Amino acid sequence: MSEPIQQPGIVAVETPISAVDFPGERMRWSDLFLALVAVIPIFVNLGLVQSWGSEHRWLDISAGILATGNWFEPRLEGQFYGDKPLLSYWAVVLASWAAGHLDEGIARLPSAIAGAITVLITAWLAARLLGRRTAVLAAWILATAFSFFLWSRTASADLLSMCFLTAAVAVYVEGVLRFRPWKTILFFLLLALGGQAKGMPAVLLPLGIAGLDMIFFRRVLLLRQAGWIAMGFTLGAGFYLLPFLLSYLEGGDWQLLQLMWKENFIRGFNAFDHKDKVYYYVYILPAMFIPWSLWLPGALGWAGTRFRSHPGWRFCLLAFVVIFLFFTVSESRRSYYILPVFPFCALLVAGFLSDLALFEKAGNRAGRTWRFLARFPIYIFGSVLVLGMIFLLAGPFLSGQHWIGMVGEIARDIPYSRLLALALAGCLALLVAGCRRHRLDWQFRAVALLALVAVGYFSTGIEPLRADRLIERAFASQVAIKYPGVELVYYLDGNATSRYYLGPGIRVKSNAEVLELLQGGRDPLFLVCEGDDIGTLEQFQPVIFSELLKGVVPGLGTVVKPETRYLLLKCTRR
Image 1 (cartoon, rainbow, N blue to C red):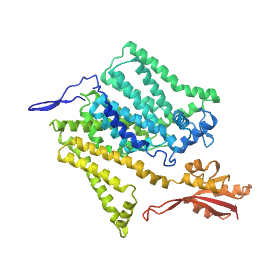
Image 2: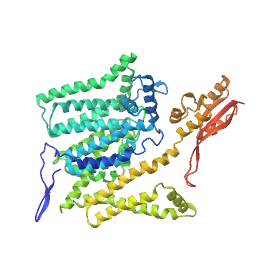
Image 3: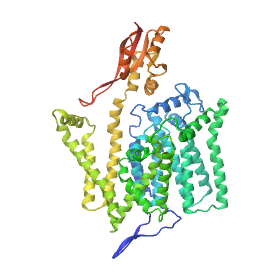
């Protein structure tokens, strides 16, 4: 965005910008350095926690590719699994080759690298669309948005897909600023890579954003540009379809392509699972974009007032609307599907905050509504900072019964509490100084610093607590040491993560199937049972069982009680 012009005795005004071109400013090396600082917490303790959620899929399938050398037939627990394209598994395999081994940290590394690259691309887009002064703030906003941070530390296909999608949009913007034939080809190749990372959204969304931008700006394609676009489309389509063709040549069927069609098209327009209300993302997006979603309403309104006059704001708002509506219209809805909109949320919020800070610095105050939308979240953060300081400093000295003693016990168990209190004190000092000097830019920097402290503390202080409470890996290690080589039976199908760590076994869905195995000559059975299911088995009279091992989630003082999560039982007929 152009800088305001300040003349003596005249209120600052904005210089006009061409109705066609973006500002097109570039980042400096200092901007790049500060943007890289924001992504450091993504890589800290990346492999500390065992796999959780669906991460076991990427570990299991990638381990299978490494063992068999078959790159075109992904298998999960020995069965063909083609629900996702192949690129995210290949990325894990390549990372394991580079590291010389495969574990949870290696499986998460492609997502972490993709997250870091997406942050840098977002900063670059901020400079090109809204001006260089928004670049670093946009990077920090995206890197510290909690769901983005969490999924950047998760083995999945989502961050790779988001990275290629954002990169394709960035290449389009660069092509608008200065056309070069190779940019057109790169655009379509990035679409193909995004499609192979997760699916069609990474292909359709950049095309939709670019197409609508061309309509709004009335861009005229020259004949030579149309020719390069046709060539890029052909190369991109061929590159996208190549793995499916190779899979056919390898296996003699189109199973991989058929599953892609089911997961990408049938699911989107006639969902067979992951259904939710049409307004699902209206409340899920703010929850996922915390803490910066507090400024999102103001940013969207601010962008709307500049939609006609400023190409950069227009493009950011257009991209946000296209992505949000695309996933809203789709019948299949899950929280993390909306992740591709995060870079454009970061651009909108960064531009909004930067504009208001610049207006204030130039002596040109924004309207009362805009000031409220910008300042009210700061008051919330200030209150959180004060309460956090009180909790960390006074909490350890609390004792007694009921909730007061519980608060004191939690405060005493907080890792690195003094160091955290010192970091919060620094953020609070900057925030107070900004308020006293009426410097909005200082206040926003204090919030950005607080957000970075929060994600940094998550990766250093909270992750060890999570590692202690996720016990599937530790339980499997105990089983392997004390009962090596036994054939396990998973009661009521078991848990996918525990099956990954414990290894292959027989899955039973009822007590009757347990008895059938015993009567068929498998006596005794070594049965893995979840703690919640033990009551169902205890009531089954034909079976006698004895407890061999117990996997217990540790408690947290007296506040959180220990919980039996898994049991290894020896079962025999009565």
